[in-house]
Length: 300
Image (cartoon, rainbow, N blue to C red; front, top):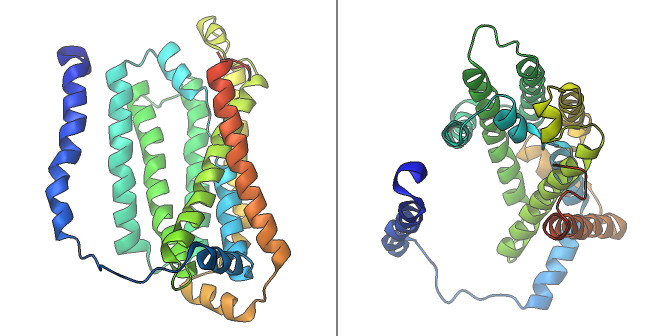
């Protein structure tokens, strides 16, 4: 659409679709004039919440797991420079990835919801590691008779399906961790922890670009050794997250049992909040450096 109709129609379409959803707002079942606790009371409630082991232990797992899902920041450049993927092909991969992300959520809801949370993360992490390792075969040109586009399509897009399967267990856990009366603020904090870990992981993936030469110039001269090494490193980091799965309760019943059996720890709550704030600060700093001084981390 962009290449044939231009950017104007793309912008119109992006503006039209959300506008179509606006009338549906009136169908929401909203409770009005609900008493709301003061900001100080909500902050105290959140502090008491994060000091509980039933909160900082499973959320610690979410943070560590997301931090270790380090992507290969040079992968898109490899697809464009070495495999000569067009913008349309890259968009097709992105669209299919979003579709499979939704299908992954549906698959958990109807097929994997009876699994324990640990089993879900163990199986999906190992499967994701296998798919990431397949990228090495694509780099070396071993696609088993398939075109590079089809091979990359199945590899990249199916990884989003795995992310969809992991999404609901994490969300269910966060919902059960929210204290009564501060559900909105608590849930926002828990999602901030997960998102800050993801942004930290993304920033760290940029830092890894300086270890080996994965620049566009290296790709153009046929030097792919750095790309192979970087792919193996990021795959190992992603799979290593499985070592922390013991921090995660098996089910929501196990989470409730952990809450009844655990005591409060101010140190645990402080570390939990400090790491979250530092992660956000680090991600913001890296983002600013990428704008002010592009290439500071060694990327092309």
